[in-house]
Amino acid sequence: MADMTFRNATIIDGSGDPGRPADVAITGDRISHVGEAPAGEIDVDATGLVLSPGFVDTHSHDDGAFIRYPGMEFKLAQGVTTVVSGNCGFSSAPARPGGGPPAGGALVGQADWTDLNGYFAACELRKPAINNIMLVGHNTVRALAMGNERREPTDAELTDMRSLVREAMEQGACGFSTGLIYEPGRYSKTPEVTELAKEASPFGGIYATHMRNEGDHLLDAVEETLGIGRDSGCPVHISHHKSAGRRNWGRIGESLARVDRAVANGQSVTLDIYPYTAGSGPMFQYFNLDDISIELAEAIRIAACPDHRDWEGRMLKDIAAAEGISLEDAVRGATTGPRGKETICIQFTIAEDDIVTNLRHPLVMVGSDGIPNLNGSPHPRLFGTFPRILARYVREQGVLSLEDAVHRMTQMSCDRFGIANRGLIAEGYIAGLVLFDPATVEDLATYDDPKLEPAGISKVIVSGRVAFDAGIHTGAGAGRMLRFREAG
Ligand code: CU
Ligand code: ZN
Image 1 (tube, rainbow, N blue to C red):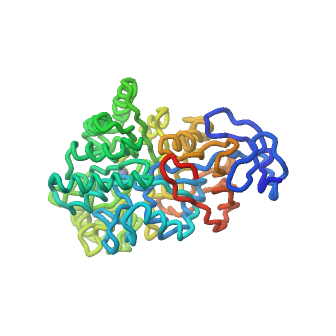
Image 2 (image 1 turned 30 degrees about the vertical axis):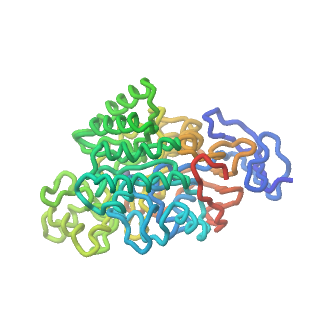
């Protein structure tokens, strides 16, 4: 007898193959039967529903969330069973105990560990709901080695950074990430990044990057990224691929053409996107206060602002009008107060057509880029990304087939990030599963009401345990800390 058996579901197994009827049984933490299955301790009649592997959020900032919100409700309710953390150059490890978060670290939080092993142990103590695999971040190691210095590293500092990256890789990080628009990473030159990526490549780790520019100089940034991949020997992953700013809309095709050319020349390149026309991040990072971009300021909505809680959820231009101040003063007001660096903004800078162009490209995966600051009014991508792909771009617009979308969100992502033994419905694989209704699955989170959990997700299984059941978070706490290419 199995522990749980799903009857009459359509199985979309993650490989991209057409859905098919089959029974699936779970025994312990594994998928024990696919096709014919014995009776289960629990028998689930899944008529009309799709059973697929749990989704992988390839681009998360959930490092700190595993500590603060181990229930991970905002991801679990979407059918996400594994996240890749440590993106955009910001990772929770390595760290200096008692030290504050690195620059821009509203994304990260306080640490009482020093390395990846210590961070994972701290997460495990809290019995998280979902799995976590981590990239080691450039901004983090740079801040540890040389603070916020606006210069190239000395040889000793570079050696420091290299050993921090190597140690994280030895402990199971899946690669090295950068956020080259952010402090302090933006003060680095290309060779520094290449040297650090070289520490990840002997392990097979990837180079994941929030590129130096995603607007007017997007193509230069793509070239820099591809060069770092070639010179370091790392497979490249471009994070949240976009062409930001109205005058740059449509240029995503040129950027993808550069990627295609590199792939044709033998380079390994993949990308991810979130399915929204707005980005989000720490606001101070986006503005030069000596030369404030009005175009950007006009596109901004405040997500979180500890110094002005009443500004949260409002467009900056409306705030400026209501307060009788200039847009420039509103930018200063949001970013220069006592807790100004914690302000998170949402910026409407992306074209809908570019999202579709990205999704049609076969190397593009899905990553929420959600910022798990549950105060204020976060970007709805934190709660809605994966159901939004299934509702809007599969069911409503037919941009992707359901099988293709599931493949990108499961097996393809697991392969890329070294998530072993997951991402496929096959005997012997770890049972991370999501049961959903393809006719009703839908994101409900909006900019005005961003914390609504999606509709149409029936059950989510993590490591063989029911973690989410018809809207209820069961508290199973079966998530695991995953090490690169290690089964477990
Ligand atoms: Cu990010
Ligand atoms: Zn980023």
